[in-house]
Every structure is written in structure tokens, then in C-alpha cells.
Image (cartoon, rainbow, N blue to C red; front, side, top):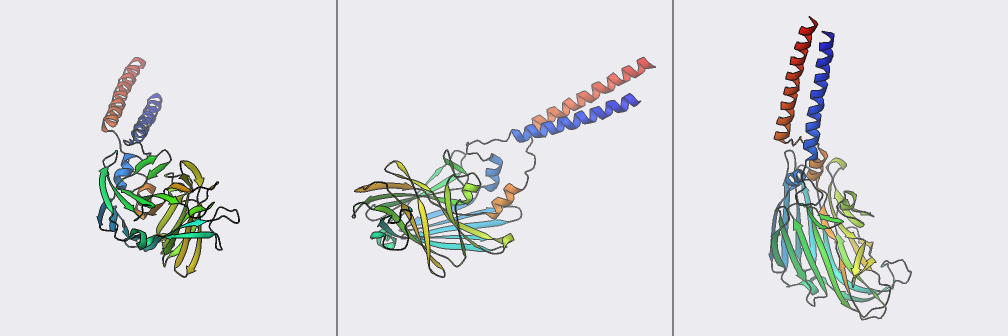
Length: 351
């Protein structure tokens, strides 16, 4: 009998091990059909409902995600060179800011820090805003990404084609480059600047105005950077609400850009002009004087989705392969049967 108890304990341990192995193999079998580094189960759980439209020089985007316990929505609107980003958390707070493209500037780095600072560095200013973008139609297109999610793209050009904005938002995660994945909680903003210099030896930059009544924080890395969806981003975060119900929107940017195919550093400086208004300067310092330059840069407008954080922060239920489990249970039953037969035969021999 003692041998039988030992045998049964060993059998129970084997059965438990087999079930753990089956569970582990089932989790390991998690798929990533589009190769963006995000498991399909997470993509399905965080897929957003997106409505996107364009009319004249305006566009409107509404993106909503609902889970069992919470829902949130972020909206992006645009008109004549100015964006508004708003985030609403049901049962919680909200956050929003306006971001206007005001000017293209030619500037001199007189103190050698690679930044556009207050003082006499700005030599030439070319107006953007409604002057450059007013009454220019926004072109909208729609496509599907690798795993079937809808992707909306908007193309906005200035009147002289000196600056072009290509805006992309997707329902699901979408890999853009080896080190960049577009999340469904943001809108990618690819900026192309084709500038002919008026002043010899100057560099180029973009002046923007950020207006918000919420709290503003500058970071050396972005939410995407911290979560592995980007590399080398800076960010301005706009937040309101209590710590456990905070709503956060952000403007982020890569800290490098391409100038005629050569990678250059990008810096951002900010000056608070009024209690709720900030002047932002994206600077593209050039190493040598040029008569004209083409700059390619990729900022992002987005939100820190509380619903997404809850979904990925909760251990998902085991997505077991039924065939795998059935096979494991059958193997356990067979092992149990063989063990009982063996034990009975041995007991009879001992009698």
C-alpha cells in the first residue's frame, strides 16, 4: 500500500506537470500574424473603432475603445495648419491641447547648442497657419494593414508646397520600420520641408504654438519609447485629473531627422508666453551652408490610453489549443490506466 501511495503521488505530480506543460505550450503558441511584435490576442483586444473624415481644409478623427470595465476616446481635428487633440476617459478626466504650425524659420546657432533660443538667432520667418494652409483641401485615403485593420491617411500641403504633412492613423498596431510601430492610440505626422534659403549659412526650424489649460511636462523620452514602440523620441505630455484617473495627451518627435538623406539631430525648445500658451521650436541644425534643403521628420500626436493599460496589465486567460489540451488529457488518462494495471499485476504477484 505504501508503494501504491508513492505511485499515486508520482502520478499526480506527472499529471500536474503535463497540464502545466500544456498551458505553457499554449501560451508559447501565441501568434503575431503581421510581425509587428504585438501578439494577435492583444491586437484584437485593443483594436479601436475609428471614424475619419475630411472636408475642404478640415479633417476630423474619432477613435474609441471599449473594454468590459472602461472605455475611452480620443479625437483629432485639424483646420488650416492647426490641430486639436482631446482625450476623454469615461468616469475619469479629460485632457486636450491645440498645436498650430505658425512659421518656418531660418536661424543661426550663435551659442552652439543646437537649439533655437530666445534672442537674435532667428533671421527669416515664413508664415504657416492659415496663411499657408487655409483653403487647401485635405486629401483622405483608406487602406488595410497586414492583419486587416483599417488605416486612414491624410495628405496636407501648404500653398507653396514648402511643407507637407502626411498623417496616418490605424485601428490596430502596425509596423512602420524596424524600430517604429504605430499604435492605435496615436496619429503619425510625417513632415516634409522643402526650403530654399534666403540667408546664407542659416539652418531651418519650425515654430509652433501649444495652447492648453492642463499640466504640461517635457520628457527626454516618449510613451512609445518607454513601451518599445519607438526609439529615441522626446515628448511633451499634457495631463489633467488625479493620479489614479489621469488623462494624458502628448506630442512626441524623433530626436533625429533626414536632411537630404543625411541623419541630423533634432531639438525642441519651449517658452511659456502666457499662462496657457507655449511657443515650441523644432530645430534642424545643418553642419554646412546650403542654398536649399529637404527635411524629413516624424512627430506623433497621441494619448496614453487607460483602457489599453488595463488590458495589457491584466494577465490574459489561457488561450489554450484544444487539440493540445485534449492530447495532454488523453496522455494522462493513458498513463493513469497503465499505472493501475501495472500496480494490480504487481500486487497479485506479491500476494
